[in-house]
Amino acid sequence: MAGAGSKLFVNGEDLDATEVNTYLMDQSIMRFATTTARDAAFGGVGEATLAEGMTCYIDADNTIYTYDGSNWVKMVSTLQPPGLVLLKSASFATSNLVVQNAFTTDFTHYKLVVETTNVSVTGTTQFQFASAGSPIATADYYYGGHVYYYNTNPTGYQAGAATALPIMIASGSVQTTSILEITNPMHAQRKTILSKGTCNFSNYIGMDHTAIVNLTASNYDGFKIFQDASATLTGSYRVYGYRAS
Image: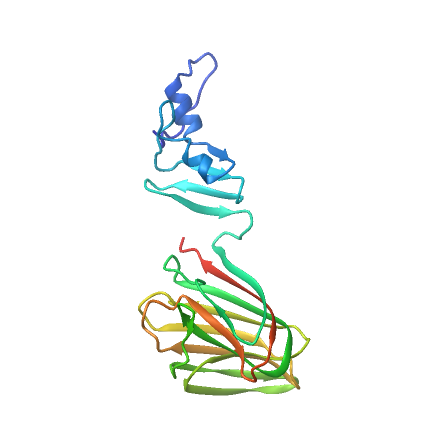
């Protein structure tokens, strides 16, 4: 069984099979080529029995998993920073980017990074939640924030009952970025969004928003990104989930 703890071995002491299995093997970080190979290594004749606390490294996805007594749980990946899990990413060139299955019930808090490298018509890039590929364009987006200008004081504003959340102003081939912190998209509570975006037009520098989205269902698994001028946006997005612990 796993969880034997620690033992100090001394010269000349016998090391029996139970001690090798419990102190050394069960409590080491085992290594497998794939999760399939890992799952096939336990429970059969002459094979070890799975026990809570066993930990392994999988070559195929460069990830460490720990067995919690029922399932193998992904802990840390060398491809992802601890605590922040990359869930979905892609490049796009479209006037109507709709992303499905970006959010799951596994996480409550998300970070969405949207970058554009080109836009065919200058305008405000906007965000909407989506459910099963259908954008939610109802007047449920309530937000307040500031627009920042070059060498000028910021302008504050608020908007109620909007049908989308503005996240940045894009123009031409200058890179524009927006970072959104999103809470509760797949939970039966009102959604909140904190966003900061750059603005590449005239003397605009950036904008930030605090938003409450009056949607309380638990099935908003995706989002839509679009330009208010129906422009073609070229860029990429990345969705991260915050690990709870």
